[in-house]
Length: 419
Image (tube, rainbow, N blue to C red; front, side):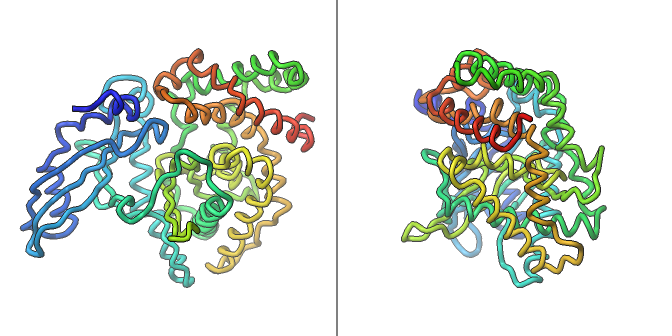
């Protein structure tokens, strides 16, 4: 029985586990994983694995499994990730997508390859948490070892610190560098990773993506000091989503020479990573999670995304260039470490590409960034926010958001983004 507090804290479709997620299923998974035919599950406790706002596309449960083997009584905490089964917006949006095909490929092919490249170079960085089971039929399911017992936690009630951001950027840089080398030397190896947010027609047609700019312009018109920016955003209103899609699909549809393409995470935000800290509070490690949207894209995609979806206002305003330069230095260092033989990307060209992809800034500041404000609210329904413009409008009027865009609009102007 769930309480009213549970109903407010967790996604509705994660309050009750589906019937197939039972003792027999988990026993079969653990027997197969451990090659222990004598294993018997004696107890299973299932609960939601995340809270509202952590994710949207999939459904996640935590299972604390008690079992016996020849070695005695044991227990293991598992994270089960599956597709939405309840009828509604979430199922309609992702039900026919390739997100599980992509993520299974990331865990079984791409990330193991990148880790192997790093090991051969003497780098023991761990890029992913073990996936102990996966299937596409009869249902799409992935099961992972739970990182909570190992001391990893998700940052929820604060923004990541500079040290945490650097740890996350360092890991992303190593992953990007490995994929950059593979794409240049074995381009066919990663060609299956061609599905992402901008190949999902159900996503592109939802009002969350198509109405954001109009709501944003409405805010600009309300505030006298912002009105001068209205013509710039009116110019791109009709096709800004299509311009975003063109950037994310560039590798497949309009590949450019020296385009700096990588296999991107493509949803690089704080809820998609778990941090581990030492006793003194310093950062020991970060584990990146949720690779359902990963696909081959320009190197700028994850980086621009991170400015709005990973950094808090303080770092976004004051440290963003230093943090991005740190990422790029780690990217270059890793390319050299793993023996990349081609011409190294340059910082000047990298920053030039970031400015060329300014439409990503405009999309994120007008459509995704306001949603970060929902995390400040006591009660919110992610499904309602995704579906109803009226539910999203108050997020554009939060003082924190208005203050943020005041700074960002001035920076865009200074950088010549409106010319």
